[in-house]
Structure formats: structure tokens, C-alpha cells
Length: 160
Image: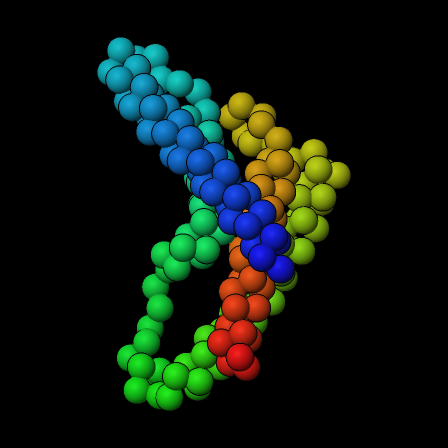
């Protein structure tokens, strides 16, 4: 299981770098479009590209954020409970979250396949949309694996 956790963490770190590159592309493209609009030569499709890069940035950063516990966690109720109860509640949350992200990944795959089948493209520059939806599915699936690895650790804390 430790080997799988290391692979998941390595993959989540790599996707996080891709997310960072997507944010950089969004920033450069937006700045270039603003400057070029001043000279009456805007970049066509900037809004679409920035939106699609946003899906890359968010979906590819999800697993890294989850693996490094960068999300918000409300502990004011559980903090006063016994340690074992806290671990049980954490494990339940991880299990439910993993199930949610598995459903999101599955539905994203189905939606991407439907978009591919119908040939859906962006309006201005005709970029196919389905690869970005597959990216969302990949991000959700990797979050699911991170949560399952965390669940495994939680089970080890519950029953040593």
C-alpha cells in the first residue's frame, strides 16, 4: 500500500505542476489580451482558452491539495471527542468523499464520451471540449485514490 501511496503522491505532484502551468498560461494570455485590446487587436478566443485552462488548473490541483491537507476542515465539534472517535469520523468523511469523487470521475468520463461523440467544440476557436472533461475525470479519480490512501491510514489509527 505504501508503494501505491508514493505513486499517487508523485502523480498528484506532477499534475499540480501542470495546474501551475495552466495558471501561468491564463495569466500571460489575459495580460497579452488586455495589452493587445489597447491597440485594437484582441486575441480571439481568450475567454474560452482561459476557461478551459481554469478546468485544468482546478482539476489537476485537487489531488495535490487533498494529499497535503490543504482543504478546509471544520474541527470545532470533533476536537472535544476522544481520539478514536475523531479517527472514526475522519475515516467516514474520507470514505464518503472518495465515493463522491468516484461518482464525479465516472460521470465526467460519461460526459466526455458524449461530448466526443457529438463533436462539441468551443464557439469561437473550435477547440474540442471533451479532453478537458477527461482532465476533470482524471483529477477526480486521483483525488479518490488519495482519499482511499488516507482512509487506509485512518484504519491503521483506529485499529492498531
